[in-house]
Image (tube, rainbow, N blue to C red; front, side, top):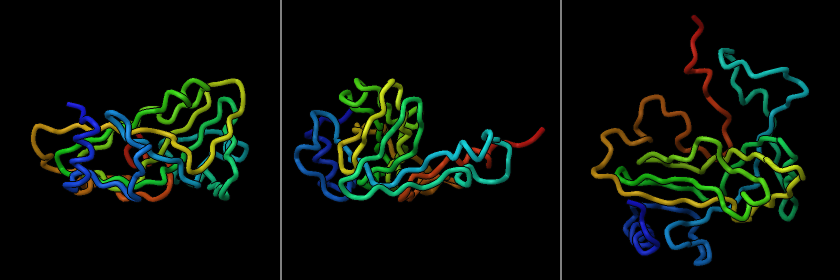
Length: 191
């Protein structure tokens, strides 16, 4: 069951959903809360690397570079470009609450997608959300740190997870504070 704005506020008051910094009223929707775009991005250095080899021992992060956007300046997302970004807000979920990251309609209508597949935030999640930004449009789009970039909805589980995300052996992204590249190479083995 998706939580209403009344229940989201109640869960925040009870500490079952923790968001920092505290959200202003305009970031609350009827069943969601908006998160803002942070100033740090990771982009692939495709001119220096011919492809991504998921079996390669080196980290995918090593073929990306970090871009730190100054206050008031935009990050320009070119057509067909992909970049990782991070939210300004941090999120912590109790062991019996899950979160779903969703794109904002206003951005989708100009071709900006904020996640490809990583929309589920497991019970026990702690950290900032990495965004998988893509520009499906034909024109470059200026994205500004601090703008509302995505929304979260929340659901109550039938019971607490036996192993919440932060306690999961080998969790890859718990506690992240910057946009982290895929850690897929740890999962793929050679035949």
